[in-house]
Length: 111
Length: 113
Image (cartoon, rainbow over all chains, first blue to last red; front, side, top):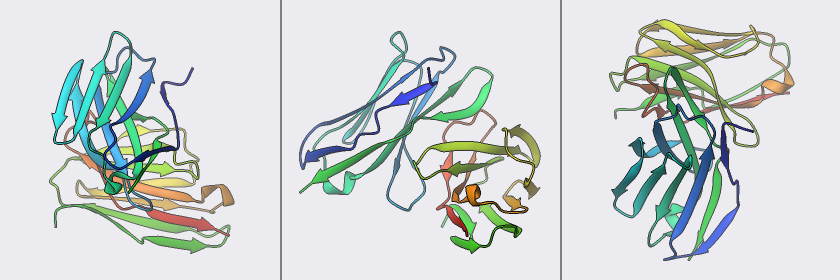
C-alpha cells in the first residue's frame, strides 16, 4: 500500500460547482497536512496547511483532516475556471522530515 | 519579489554531458530541497539541506550532487546525464527542518537527448 493515495482524476466540473478532492494515507505518524495547487508548467503553490485533525477555511477553500480515518479533503466552493490545475496533497510528521506527496488530481472547471 | 528562483528554466542536452541547475531563495528560510517531478507528475524528494548541512539524501544515483554554498542557495550538479534524467526539477525552501510549508520554485525542465 502506498503511503499516500490520491485519485489522479481527471475531474471536470461546471463553473460554480463544489469540488471535493481527497487523499488517504497509511502512516499514522503524519500530523502535518498540506494542499498544493500546480498550474500547468509552474511550480506547486501552497494553498492550505493544517495540523492534526479538524477543519481550516480560507476563502472558498476548506481543508479537512480526519486522522482516525487517515483521510484528508480539500473543498472548493463556487469553483472558477481559474481553479483549473493539479491539486497535490502532502503530509509529514513524527521523525519524518520529508513531505510525502500524493500523485495529484487534475481538475478542470468549465465556464 | 520574495521568492524561490531557479536557473535555467529549460535545459536541453545530450546524453553523457554534465549540467548544473541553480536555486536561490530570498525568503530567509534555512532549509532547501530538490525534487524531481516525472512525466506522470509525481513529486519525489531528492535532497534537503539545512543551514548548508545535508539532512535528507534519498536513493538517488551518485551522479547527482547537491551543493549549498550558503543557506540561501542550493545547486544541483548532474554528471553523465542519462535519458531517464529527463524530468522537471523543483527547488523548494522552508523554515526549520520539519519540512512543512515548503515554497517551490518555477522548475527546470531538463530534456536529455
